[in-house]
Length: 77
Image 1 (spheres, rainbow, N blue to C red):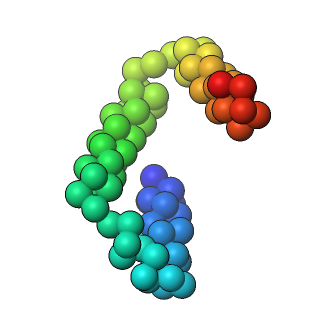
Image 2 (cartoon, rainbow, N blue to C red):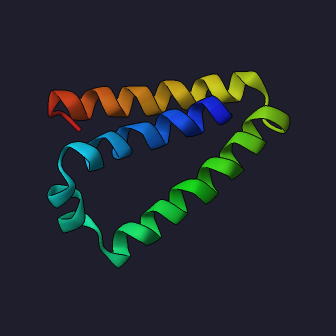
Image 3 (cartoon, helix red, strand yellow):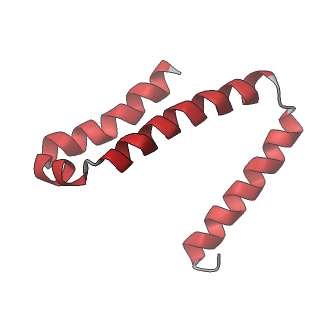
């Protein structure tokens, strides 16, 4: 989990170092709320996925999520 957390921080940090004016223009209270929601929901999801949900259910949900994402990339969904 530490590896994923460090990688997740490295991208925005690199953008901040390369273009600080772009990052400063994007900071807002809404962004802070979204970041909090992402951290909380990621923690809940990882806990449920690792300890409570059966692997078959996780695979099916992942298949649906990837299908929806693929369709959106194609402009269909």
